[in-house]
Length: 292
Image (cartoon, rainbow, N blue to C red; front, top):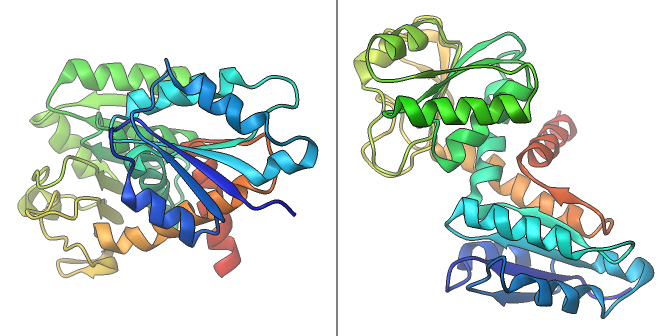
């Protein structure tokens, strides 16, 4: 059987070392790392990958698209897929800056304790790379999601994008002030997905969230994104509310890493997969079922 070759297409000048280590640990036999990849230069790299093997051997080649610029990585992914034709294709994973695997892990964590269909949720930092995907995944699971941002215009854009991707999605933009306070007070699930080291919700506001059953803070850099949560929390009961469970970034991180590694392994099972946030969520849910 041919060796499993993973091509790492990174939009940054220096390919991510983190992604490279995970790829090796996930079972890639050969890792070919490319930095500075853009829609303009990726087609030749793709053709080099698909023309060197044929038939069933193509399943032993796969592509990982990453980088710190999520929109740039999405454009590269689109150009990669456009370069395929007929049976000449390989499987592709999109996970720039871990946005997709992190969002999937957050939704998996929440779904352990709350049935998401019909549930009210708030996504703090909902216009960032991870927050947008958390909102989209929650909408796909049937939750009613408030997308919180300091910019009402940007939050509205994200809500429109989610509705376009998820027909029937119930999402609304909220900003700091009364609308956010009301959304937090009535939410069963709250996810903080803001930038590292940015406080999004103070501890007193968290204590006022009396309907909350799960709160996830994806920020690992002090100060906490959500007051009262520490990075190591993993389904930790809140001291002020024994019905509320808390997750910090490291508490979700183990699930994120399992999803990331499993997704890379899945790439080599066939040659026609394109894995985005939804597919990573499905992988995370299947891992939960396996554990149980």
